[in-house]
Length: 304
Image 1 (cartoon, one colour):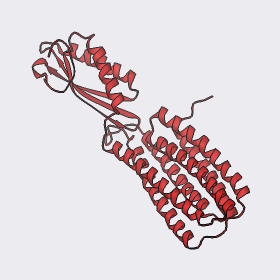
Image 2 (cartoon, one colour; image 1 turned 60 degrees about the horizontal axis):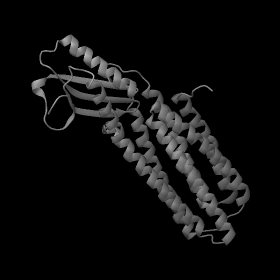
Image 3 (cartoon, one colour; image 1 turned 180 degrees about the vertical axis):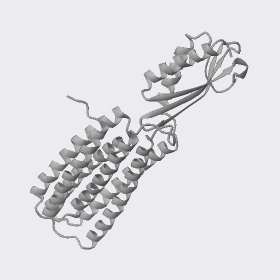
Image 4 (cartoon, rainbow, N blue to C red; image 1 turned 90 degrees about the horizontal axis):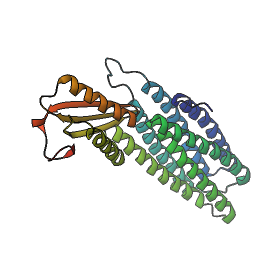
């Protein structure tokens, strides 16, 4: 089976988003349920964010140029931020609709057929969420990963809405319908807040997760113990910008080490890091041994 590119995955997300929106609007039209309307409103946001993600993924793949020497990958974080904002706005709109329903609640009809339609939409969303999550992680795309996480939450929300609407019809407690819509809105607000936090963190150059930091330190230790000329590494810094990871550190070598040998040592370290962290760019600042640090060492060979 051919590997799906980030571009094609984003285009598929937009196309299927339109289909899911149509199905959910049909489910609402069959019942008049405020809860199902809230589910459909969230799908409107899904379509908009899928379009934004499609544009962001294509722009992020542009090569580096004179005005953007580090590439364009950070634009995907802007897409994720916009998605978080739109999700929050959708939740507020749902709250407004639910508040009207609390005052003017009415009967919910046609649940059987609407449930089948909504289940079909949820099945499409679940398959798409799994695909976007897989491609997003493989391509290290914040836009696709955020879209996948949003769709997974949408699937859970839709199933909860269906169960609640069924309970409304079974019990005859019509007030449960707008109350259920309020619960949906609170869940969407939680999701939007998490997406905003994660994407803003990327824009603010957060370092790699702790587990990856430790793996990088272990990798440096392994290679530095093989290199007699490498005395110490300190001031290790990392940051991630979409598909790219940036690593910088200071490398202490003997003061009389020839420039040619120091350069070859840096090349070997950069190659080792690139093999472990795909898409990484490493910058190494070489210093003589009198610049060694006594605090905050990442690794040091031969004494303290």
